[in-house]
Image (cartoon, rainbow, N blue to C red; front, side):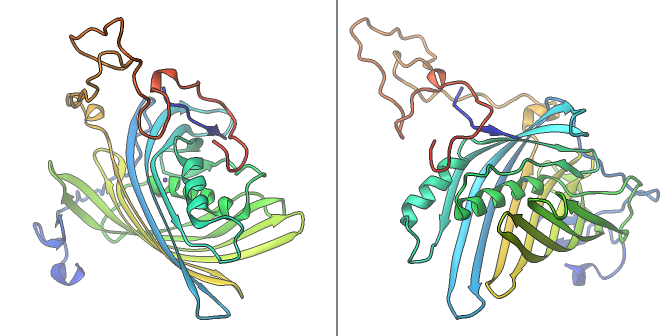
Length: 349
C-alpha cells in the first residue's frame, strides 16, 4: 500500500410550474415530485465509498493597487465511510487526496521559487488522509485543525484543500422537501475568542426543482445555497477577520443519497489587503461496485514478470534484473511504509 500521511470535500425555459420533460440546462430534464415531497439523506453505510474530482481557481486582487495574482489547484478525493464515532459524534469518514496539482503565483519577494512552492504543496497533499465527522443531514461535526509548524502560504493551500472536503456535503432538513421550499441554517465552527480558526454565518437554501440527469438517469434535487460568513483567525500575536459570500448550485441524487455535483462561486473580502474571486467545481460518484453492479475489470499494465505486482503466466528468470522503480522514483506500492498517524514537518514528505 502506498504511504499516506494522516491527521486528525434555465428558469425561462421552464416558466410554467412543474412541466414534465422541460429541459432546463445541459443534461437536466424537469420532473414531477411526489405530492408529499422527497426526503434528502446521505448514505453513510460503513464501507461506502465516494469518488470526487475537485477543481478550484481564484483571482486575488490587491486592495491598495491594480495588481492581481492567480491561484488554482485540482485533486481527486476518495471518501470512505468508517462508521459511528462516539468521540466526535455522527459518522467518521476518511478522505484521501490523489492526482494533486497546485499552481499558485507568489510575490516576487517570496524566499522560495514558485516551482518549488507548488511542488512542496502538491507533495504535502498527495496521499494525505484526513479523518472528519458528519451526520446523515450533511452537517460537519468535526474537521481537524492544521499542524502549527506550517508556513503561512502553505497553511492557506492546505486549509483550502480541507475546506474542499466539505463539498461532499450540504446540510439538508429532516423533513421531506418540495420544489420551492427554503430553509436557513446557522453556521458555526471552532471556539470564539480562542486560538485557531472560528467562523460563523448564515446559510439560506432553496429547492430549485427536481430533475433527471446522467446515464442511466438519476433523479436529482437542484439546490441553491447562499452563505454570508465571517471567519476569524486568532494567534498569539492577534486576530484577523475575513468576510465571505458564496452561492452554491448543487445536484443531490435523491435515490442514491449523495451530492452528485457542486459549484461554488465565492467572494472573499480581506479588508485593506485583498479581494478574492473564486470558483470551485466538484463532481461526486458512487463507484459501480457500490451500486450493486459488477466492479470494472482491472487492467494489468505491468509486463515485467519480475515486478512484485506482475500478474500473468510468465515466470521471472533467476538472472533477471530487479524491476526499475516507477516514474517519480517511489518504490512499488508493496514496499511502501505503513500509514502513520501524524504529518511530516512542513515542506518534507
